[in-house]
Length: 487
Ligand code: NDP
View 1 (cartoon, rainbow, N blue to C red):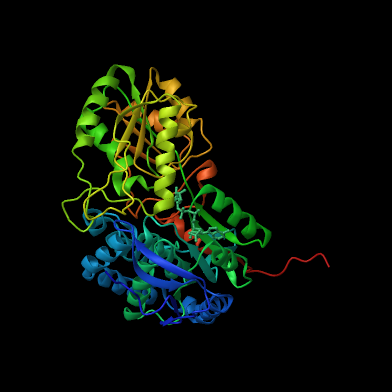
View 2 (cartoon, rainbow, N blue to C red; view 1 turned 90 degrees about the vertical axis):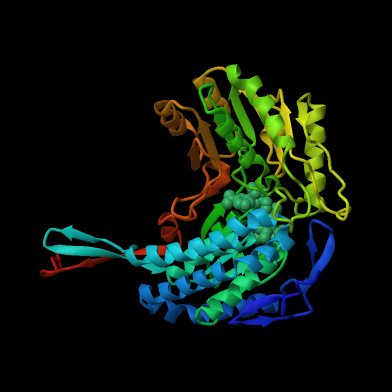
């Protein structure tokens, strides 16, 4: 299998190589085979990308929003036309099954481009009546924005960040995770084909040091990171020391609360989606599943039955529902957490192994795993695992479960399953989480803002809220009378 792109980076509307950069081998996580060989950016590549962005941004920002929108919409159409090939590439890059990538990756990127093409056209400043005189506000682009991505949703992250940034008149430089560098390059080609002027969307590859160089560069006005809390803290520190805008989409340890009046099958379906989709490598996963005591045993019994039916295997087979983790390091980390769960006294009720599959002997597979009897202090209930490991905890009362759900440094997401809707809204209002679901889990339509409370993040992606985070507000006072000066 070979999906070697024309070059490692995409700058000013074309592919660019610099073999002086550190080697970066791309693995297919299902087999461990090298499918592309790239180079991390050198300081020269970082300079070229930021300079291309800086040069292109001014005239882009002066275009009418409707003209910018037309280009984004064309790019959205191209993403949809090429969904099959982009999904295959995303599967090879991430190991996520084609069954998922066909519906959740390039398709979600296309939604973002289409949505922000529309939303930006009515995202205006306001007119303020000052009693005779008046004021108005303008929403102006920030300039050059940098995006730094995680490995789990590479093309979606690139689009969720670049679409609102470009719609608002900014230029963009994106650094994908070094684990998954391929589909951002495909997105760059599509932007160019759709008519995006050169220099407005650039991709540079690299490790954390390249991300750090992009963030601290004087040309960069804003950074948006999707990654772990430790990385977010580092980047936020650098951005703060240079007084730059920053959005942080970070990790979580989110609660799903299942009351005993919930629809059992729906609650189990939500909990499985919130733990096993993308092999559990989703920031908003509900990895602490609190089940009210009267329902607990029936919930666990059906959960185990349904978990055993998950088809794991060849990610390119559309019948397969679960693929491997992204790489060996993540695989080792998840297996270590499974051992920690056992050692701390949780009960392993299903999964827990690293299966070896014919033809995929070197793949990074971990079975969908459920622990019961988990207590709040166990590591598997406190730390983000980023793998298919669900912890089931039981509870008695509403007040108790709210307090336990909130007892974490994270605050990305939360879900509540109940047929009692007043209770659902009451509980959601008390949960310290930025992205919540009632009787559903992990649905992230681009129309709704997405992001976290507490250590899970600052700022928002999606919805019209994100347009505020890719713009700055200018206030203009207009005098209609004489200047009232005491001098
Ligand atoms: P990391 O935090 O390890 O990396 C995120 C990105 O930041 C990578 O591109 C990384 O490069 C880069 N980076 C690392 N150090 C620096 C630095 N000092 N300055 C600038 N950039 C840097 O996250 P992962 O890629 O491991 O992704 C998993 C994490 O992402 C999980 O915690 C998960 O919860 C979170 N996540 C959050 C989401 C959200 O929207 N809230 C969505 C998806 C994931 P490199 O890879 O080369 O180290």
